[in-house]
Image 1: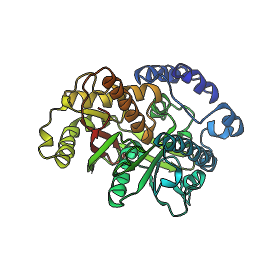
Image 2: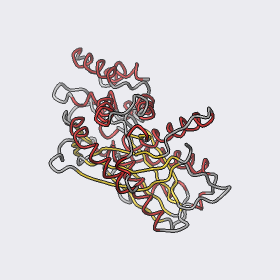
Image 3: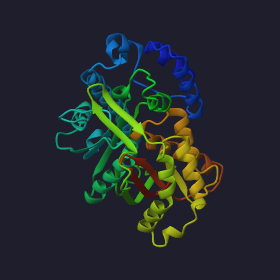
Image 4: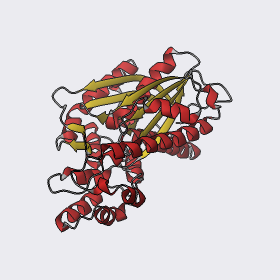
Length: 360
């Protein structure tokens, strides 16, 4: 629970700086996050006390923990997804795996395939260090694979943990407290394909145009470096403004490429699945596009219940959207058929997909 984050973090790192503690308390209140899930535990810190000690070379220990954890979480999410699909594991022909939380070879895509017991002939691809835009990037890649391989079923799995970036509080690194207050761990999964089998498969969304764009000159706005102490990660204060300045033009491009005249569709007549990088980013997107207050409900729920779980979070947003659409349909209410799936990551990179909600 978010209410226990501050005391737990400062007790576990043996930090007694009251000013830093007050700062983290304020940050935890402003994030709007209520619950999160993390791999880090008191047991891990007992076994690896050096992780909470400043300046020690601990990247090996961090990756040993992280590599194992992200694989296990991805296995559990994938099995749950395939069970919901109602098809056997043998139907999976391709695997797209997304993670910014591990570094090894063979990569996590092979470890996930082995853990799931997939066929040795499954064609795999891994997207590494794509950060918060990784989930939508994975959807884009999986979509292309499915469209170009008739009869295929592409498993997309995302998995992230903050273990690699866990550090004790320091007045020299005030941004670390933002990560402590905002980011969470977890995994997500989806299966993509064309021509759903009648009676055996139920499609939830239909993906149309998929667009990626990076913004020149913003390479340092989302910055992460793998060091001997783990990943040092920092977001520039200008990020919400950068996103606000460019989001409308990007959305127009995605809409134009997906449907003839699509760029003329009114924003409030669409659904919006936006990666909740933080409350400020959601507010800036909402303001620039002049969206109604209910349009980002699914994004805000995902942020409230999971925090910013990096590439996983868009999966949680889409799950909440399906849940909301089913409730509206049961009440006989109309829902938006077309909408955009958006995320923003290192680069600064924008990822967007024009999609059709088949549950609406």
